[in-house]
Image (cartoon, rainbow, N blue to C red):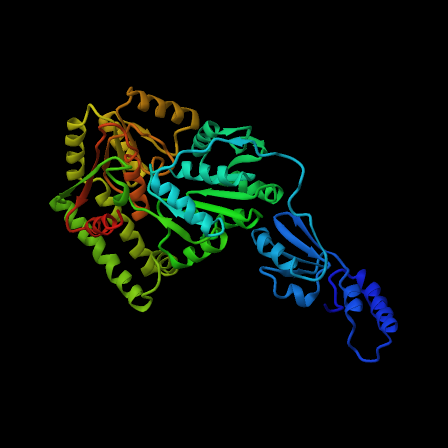
Amino acid sequence: MGLRWVNERTRPQMRRAHQRARADTGRTSGRLTRPARRLLVSVTVRLEFNRGTITLSGCAEHDAAGLPGVLWDPRVRVYRAPGYHYAALAAAVRSFESPVEDCVSPTDGCTVRTWAAPSLRPYQSAALTAWELSSARGMVVLPTGSGKTRLAMAAMASRRARALCLVPTRVLLEQWRGELAKEYDGPIGQYGDGIRKLEALTVATFASAFHHMETIGNRFDLLVVDEAHHFGTGANDEILELCTAPARLGLTGTPPANTIQQLRLEELIGPVVYRQSVSDLTGEYLAPLQIVTLALDLTKDERKRYAAEVAIYHPVVRQFFRYAPRASWRDFQNAAIRTDEGRRAFGAWRRSRKLVAFTHAKREALSRILVEHRQGRLLVFTGNNETAYAIAREHCIMPMTCDIGRNERKEVFERFRTGELGALVSAQVLNEGIDLPDAETAILVGGRLGTREYLQRIGRLLRPAAGKQALVYELVMRDTHEVRNSTRMRREL
């Protein structure tokens, strides 16, 4: 070990120890004997949790240089690393000759209670095994309705560790707490919806975790991330960075296609360790699925207006991607707003999408389908709230949008489950995290978020039930971008 230490107060002590060691050994060379070296390394390396980071004191500079994520913090004169590096840091410093004092995870506080062992389907057991073999770090990709929550409970039960479950919405927070209570014999903590209660098993919304992770991030050994595809883009990544839990399980039905986001998720959660698609599970573990694509025609006036908008934006888009073939659509958006031509092109693109979102033909097709399935439970999905409200007015269907309050939303879902309401229409609210097992038919009038949205919407119908047949109507306008999008998304099933 070298003599350049992090803590300035130890430098004079080490200098005197060095001199005494040289005198005691009677050596004239610059090298020290083993007893002298043992004396020099007697300073304890201390790890502490500080506002979502790990601080290291008593660590030699040349040792700190090889530690993951470690940077020198001149404000307090210690080395510091993001909390998610804790497991790697703890393992690394224990290889030093110096004694180690690990104060990161508190020993007092909540105790894990008894778990019931959740029964698993074969693919769920395989996913759990794959995750455990990957050092309890990684993501599992399963479609909606296949039991990702149950898989997470099995992981928590097998490790019997303090666990934090992260969910994107308050609706999912309530659903997770309800499911966990069926298998866990103990109090369940909650961060979200106005409640801040810490327990050995805690569920938190992303928003609440963002505000409180710097204080509770060291309280858990297992981090479960539901809808993990929300991370990896920088917006919410700090939540995962501030947590020290060494074991991490990410759950998603729609992993990101972006390579950069994939790599970031591997760093924060782990690699994809198991994957099953809708087609792999449909029929045996998910409800049988039938997709009916209705190819519709624009009216003469709609065709003329659509062609005019395409003529404005298409040359600009084509030129951009010719010069930047690896760019994303977001890159084009960012570039377009910087020039008059780009803004005109982007405006034309948006108008073309709005034009085909709810055409005359879609209006007629929707009316026929609603009449045909008026005795069933239907979900109608649109590309925007404007269309959702238009359909709600025309057909007296309850709209589910971001404008609907939590209490009213809860009441509407209950009325749908009991059959008092036969149909719901939504742009985005029903896409993710809503458990509506009674829904049998979906009508995809329009969309805007691509493959992920497509899979999430279909997934709303796939929870199995005796005699259930999931039926999806997809309304697609001929000779528009919708044909290409539909073909691409169907390949992902």
